Image 1 (cartoon, one colour):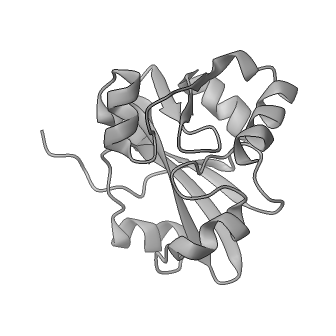
Image 2 (cartoon, rainbow, N blue to C red; image 1 turned 135 degrees about the vertical axis):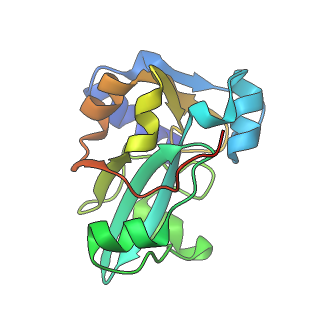
Length: 157
């Protein structure tokens, strides 16, 4: 059902042809990268947070980790991930398929600066066997994000 919700949303936005359905699992960044034959960092990981009673999604590059200080400085609250068993009910997609497409009403979406190093990224498409191939500008457009944030730790090269 989640894939169908995401596909319906993407079809309305003119991006249905960007959806990739796979035999292999895309539930984790590592699995998605292997299935898509791309670097793990090119997976646009969607993280689910609770800010008091409000749900927030933040898309980051696949290997990024949230910096608690940056998160608190940005959102003026502690980073609190939605418990695994509550994600599907709150967001509208189960873990492994969480994406900003076809989500429940009232959820704010943000894009992390860590994604800007790429031309193309691959967020999930509603389930654990799908992805969407999008340029950064397409992602900005279709995700209807509230804006860009910088809440991830600096990557060490």
